[in-house]
Amino acid sequence: MMPNIAIRDLTMEYSSGGYAVRPFHHFDLDLATGDMALLLGASGCGKTTLLSMLASLLTPTSGSIRVGDTEVTGLKGAALAEYRRRTVGVVFQAFNLIPSLTAQENITVAMRYAGADKKTAKRRSAELLEMVGLEERMHHRPRQLSGGQQQRVSIARALAMDPPLIVADEPTASLDYMQVDGVLRLLRELAAPGRVVVIATHDERLLPLADRVVELTPRPADEHRAPERVELQPGQVLFRQGDAGDLVYEVDAGRIEIVQEMADGTEEPLATIESGNYFGELAPMFGLRRSATARAVTDGPVVVTGYTLRDFRARRGANTPTMHTPPTRPADESA
Ligand SMILES: Nc1ncnc2c1ncn2[C@@H]1O[C@H](COP(=O)(O)OP(=O)(O)OP(=O)(O)O)[C@@H](O)[C@H]1O
Ligand SMILES: [Mg+2]
Image (cartoon, rainbow, N blue to C red; front, side):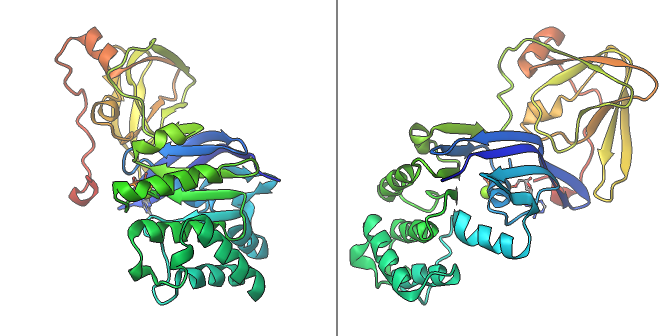
């Protein structure tokens, strides 16, 4: 019986071309057994990163991921291998089937690797292929199967050891609309009591099937929300480079310093924002992550107010030029 999933205070930082990229920063998420959860969000928002951490293929910088009673981030050696083989089933976008093996062999090989005996592997793989509607295609190799059929073999393989957690990365991305239907229904059936299915996708067709939708992209800038007043202690960070950000801030009292964090742990000062001025407009304007860190200067308390871009424009008038120029990045980093 399994698993509730609890993600706490999760931070993942990559170093990219000398800059720190932080798709997750103090991120929390709970998923209940039986849930089918969708991770939605623009390219680069961190969907694959989160699935990889759930599958223990990637270790977060800090924070905790509990799957049932297992602390995934602390797994090593035999316990890690056991988790990957038996607790989590992974469905990749590109199927990752072995081309020289038949559909059935692709499944039995994975099961043998996970410790199943030959007889069990043969029986179970046949059952699974029947379940995904491929009983006639058991002895075909991947190239003799359509994209949707390959995807179903890959799902059957992920299910082979009956893992309580399934993670699927863009499972419908390589499928045409005729093939999507069957794969969607299959994924939906998987999310039953005792199992959690987490799917990363751009595909809004999956929305009606989901119990949970986890939106990893910041909320749209063109909405109205109550302004957010924040009091900061000296030196306290308001937002960090790499965070998702949807508010523009005005300094009401004190001063804010903007610094660029470098991958080697050093930082470079970019600007100091005085009372009455604003900062943090780039991320909401362009749907980007914070390109720098904002924190209160160390010599006194600071008060800022955050506005959505729409509200900010309404306050300041239509022409809201940028106060400080965006930090320039090397050309190959701008994408
Ligand atoms: N190995 C890596 N090294 C450096 N940066 C990385 C690495 N992997 C991912 N990133 C960065 O982390 C962020 C999240 O990437 P991720 O692949 O998780 O996004 P995604 O939501 O899956 O995107 P897509 O929808 O395009 O698949 C991106 O800014 C990406 O550039
Ligand atoms: Mg991805």
